[in-house]
Amino acid sequence: MDYLEWFYKRVYELRSQKGVSAREMSLSLGQSESYINKIENKKALPSFTGFIYICEYFGVTPEEFFNTQSASPKKTKELMAELEKLSPAQAEHVLQIVRDISEK
Image (cartoon, one colour):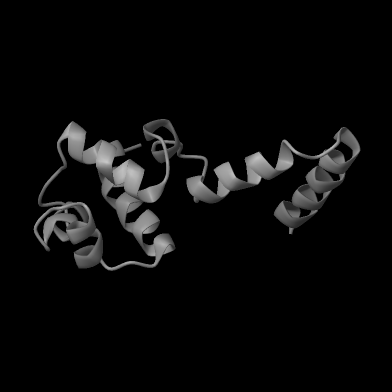
């Protein structure tokens, strides 16, 4: 897997899921209005500190950001928090529903 290529795409996908423009996100991070656009268009990479701020903006940890198995790490985190509140029987029921959905 080309992780660098994946990184650029991941920023775009998470920003799109959040429903904000690249300009809006850039300004929210305290950067120039073209900051995120340059990242998504493979013209720049954020510093490590910049990356941490990007993760905070998306509401995910760096580990969640790099989880290639999760298309929507913030939704996965929210779902897990709700699942932890369920009884074992309820959790089993939800698991069966998810399995049914993913098989289709």
